[in-house]
Amino acid sequence: QVQLVESGGGLVQAGGSLRLSCAASGRTFSSYAMGWFRQAPGKEREFIAAISWSGAITYYGDSVKGRFTTSRDNAKNMVYLQMNSLEPEDTAVYYCAAAWAGSANLRLREVYGYWGQGTQVTVSS
Image (cartoon, rainbow, N blue to C red; front, side):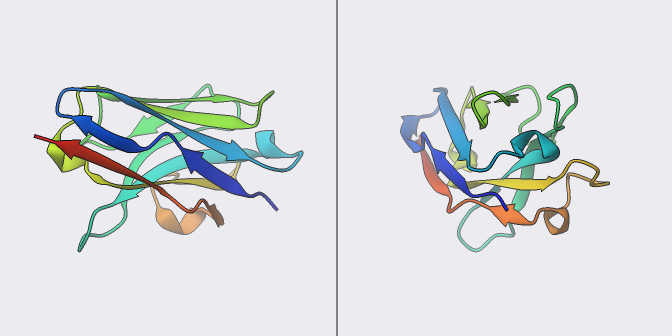
């Protein structure tokens, strides 16, 4: 079992940056790959980024590639999403999620068994 709590969301102007954090409970955090998703009103939940259990491998969605970076600190049970060059289209609720380290395709929502409550990111033009 793992519980996830996101923080760091807020209101930012276009072109600005935010750093989201996700705190995980439990002693087996390093057993999980971690992902970030977002959902805007009226839209499907969208894959943003994922990171392997060790942090050695990362994946990004096409819409954020080159602007967003995910990282993790297993000693602190934390995962981060650094978001740069934010655009109004990035406005959404952002979720972190956990999947078993051996999960096949970390771009799929279905492989994640644990989700945080989400944090709102609003980018003004």
